[in-house]
Length: 178
Image (cartoon, rainbow, N blue to C red):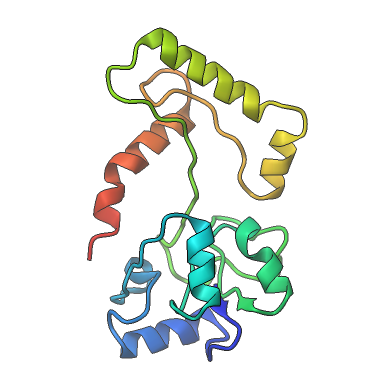
C-alpha cells in the first residue's frame, strides 16, 4: 500500500525508486533484492495512521484495514501479499505474480501463555479460543477478510496451523534484521 499522492503506480516503479535510495523506503526488501527500512508499529492502527499522515512511504497490511482507504482514493495497492489475489481487490496482482517470489506476508493471531502454564489452564484457553472462532458467522467473516481461522496446538500434535505459527514466531526475529 502506498499513499495515492506518491508517484508510484506499480510495484515495479516503487522497487526501482527504492533501488535508487537504499535503506530509505520501508518494505519488500528480500524478495526484490533491495535494502529497505523496516519501521515497526504496535499494530495496524498506528501503522495506518503513519502512512495516512505521510510519515512512512508504504505499508504492508491485511485488506480489512486498508480497504476503506483504497476505496476513498487515499491509498493505492501495488500488490497482494498472499498466494492468491484478494477477492475485494481482484485487479491487484500478488507480488508473486509480479515476479517477487518469497514476498508472501500473512497476519497470524494466536493465544499465548507463559512457559510452565499448567495443562488444565492451557486446555481451558484452547477451548475458549476454539469456541470463539466457531461462533455462528465468525468463520465466514474471517474467510471474507482472507483470514481463515486455523486450529491446533503449538506444543504439538493437533494441527498444522499452530505448528506453523510457533515456527513463525520463533523465526520472526531473524526475518526483520537488516
